[in-house]
Image 1 (cartoon, one colour):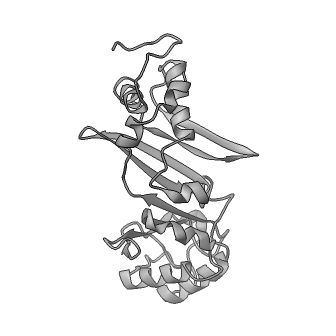
Image 2: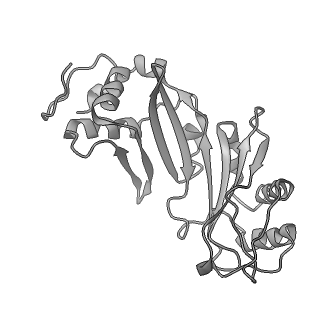
Length: 240
């Protein structure tokens, strides 16, 4: 099948064939969606020179991305921004979802940021931190173990400084304590934690403590093989 650059899409027997075509010919690699007004904003990742029908197909896929193995998306969009990454791997179509707030400064999803901050001060054994303008963004990550509901700290991107601009260390034990504070009642929406059976990492991002209290709470999902689901679907034939 030759690449069409006209206003009309080629015929595809199923969504699998359509997606493979978009990946191979227009570097389609997914997209994102988040609430905007009464609806949702969305966009796709593909070549800017791709024809209109290819972008429309990509938008349809992102809007109706297969979610049979991700019941959270059917029952509770627990984080505002969903980023979809689509890859073709060993002949399979692999979809991964990442969840976050699009703008940390607009929507902190830690409901009690000052409480979290004070608890972090106690755990890290510091009194205050360098001002936000003097600091790089800081992250604490917890990756799921094989049991999925148990999370192992990853502290390599932790880069906090105290009021004397001295680097603050965070041990894995301290990171585990911070996670328990983050999970405590009233700190975040409890429905977030229901999703961790399909999440392989928890990420707490912030640009400093003792300032504007802007925290971004996000998660990254497990790889989802959607090959068979797409082989049995003709949703994208409606687009283009």
